[in-house]
Image 1 (cartoon, each protein chain N blue to C red):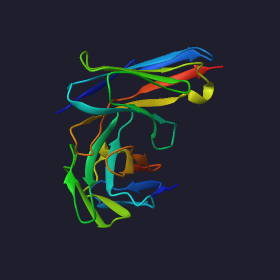
Image 2 (image 1 turned 120 degrees about the vertical axis):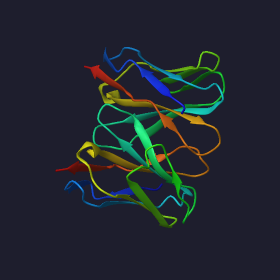
Image 3 (image 1 turned 90 degrees about the vertical axis):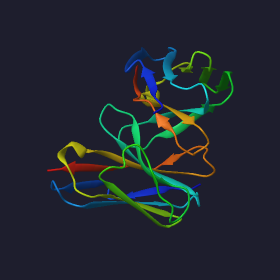
Image 4 (image 1 turned 135 degrees about the horizontal axis):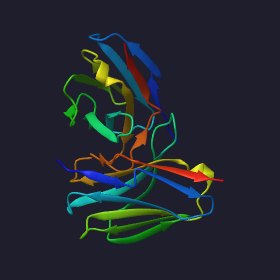
Length: 111
Length: 111
């Protein structure tokens, strides 16, 4: 069974700081990696995805993927209190429309 | 844009009771999913369906049944509710296995 692990479990940063979240996965043959954001009482919403080794930037978000080390990270520049949420890393293993999720990182941005 | 509706929002049942959760989407997506989210844990896949009348088991299908009679709807039945099943159940859909769109969830409490 494929596994996805996230760290840290929780992260507290001051407003304006960079938030850095990590995710490791069990199989380098993974297809795509997604980051989802989930606010309390809501369903997850997709933020950004990456398929190829390297980095991808969208607005304040940057994702780095290193397939050799089975590691992906999400960095949120200029973090805002509205970024406070649970962040879920999800990996597609194989072309079967399925995602395997990590346990999440709780981000708190303090004004 | 589209929307995923889950009913009911809150579901309270007795131990041993059969309970049904419903999900509707108007994205016209082919694939739909049911996930379970326990407190402090990620999402675990219960069932998914790649087209109407198709059902595929996920990692957590024991104790659950599912039904996809129409493209737009996907139901999940807890066959015999247990106290350790108190969780949030999330429905999602996708077109072609790309971004998954989630509903707001049904919170299950078993007395």
